[in-house]
Image (cartoon, rainbow, N blue to C red; front, top):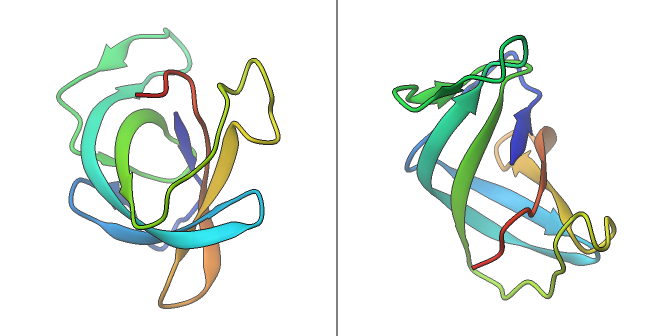
Length: 101
């Protein structure tokens, strides 16, 4: 699950970002945006193609470095990460690993 925190850009499928997980840094590719969560109704919008400012959604990421993680509910230190815009080096998203595959 990712919370998008940038008003300059939006998150969409195929986007490349930096990822920081614990002390490791690497690059991540957004393989799939499964759904955007409407926080007022908890409805899953599976037709959404992007996440805008303050949107929460479930995504599938592919990383260039292996991540050693636990589910967020088990250990929030190893179950969380941030996404970084490589052009501006600013944090654009925060996420938690719910169902590792």
